[in-house]
Amino acid sequence: MPFRDQDLQAVKDHLTKHAPDSCSICGGTSWTDQPDLGAVVTQHDGGVNMLNTLQVLQLVCDNCGYVVMFDAEKVGVDIDVKLKRRR
Image 1 (tube, helix red, strand yellow):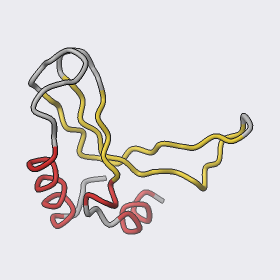
Image 2 (cartoon, helix red, strand yellow):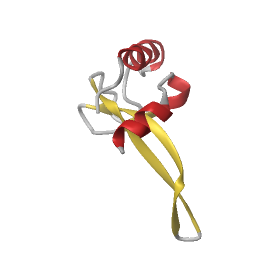
Image 3 (cartoon, helix red, strand yellow):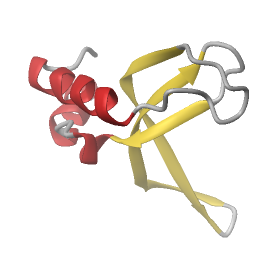
Image 4 (cartoon, one colour):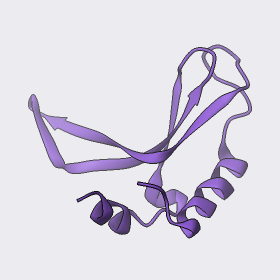
């Protein structure tokens, strides 16, 4: 699902200010943004807790594949609207 215009603008603004200039693993300077939400799911005692997820935006280094993640809510993406659209 594509972002709403206001969410996409929040993502662009945040990445302009906070995206790394170079990859901390290989030093590469080219990033592919993945403008969609991903989720980091927590595990406790070997079991997956699907109710406790962190919605993230990711940047991927074009050279080595290293992934940098940002908390989508702190970036300014309306998480509730995004999750409702997916259902």
